[in-house]
Length: 179
Image (cartoon, rainbow, N blue to C red; front, side):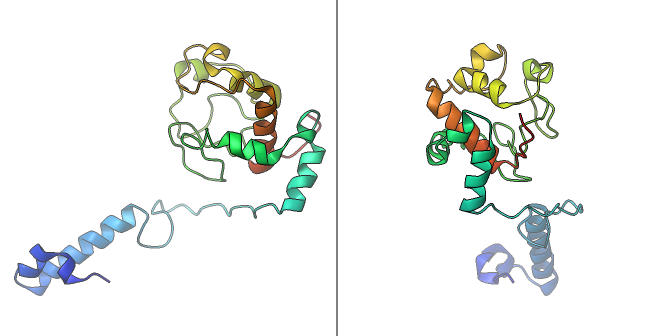
């Protein structure tokens, strides 16, 4: 549990009630932060995360993508996406950061993700994220949708954009339907 030596002020205080109250307060604090008891502390059951794709499954999904994404280099896409990781997560149920979590982005409406504070420009944008739209967005987010809050300068190289889009399709739960 907790060491009394870690809390010198409590150790000097008299009585076991003070020690018990302090330990309870620390325990409740850790639980509220999601570091103590089981679960996230929200009381809601978390949806099970889908199993990670094997390399063979990733390769099969890549070849099922429409051209030009079926010829993409997933490793280059992963490397190019590293520039995005400081603001975005791509895991199921992952947290929003400076930018929203991108899991399941393809086919979703722009500016409509729950629990993320979008700019007015993106909240009122009238488009659905698909590969072509994301390609234009990634080329230069500021000129694609003036007024958005994304500070990223963009990916000017078309091959990098193709590879990032394919990487995102493979890593974010995309299900091909003949896009």
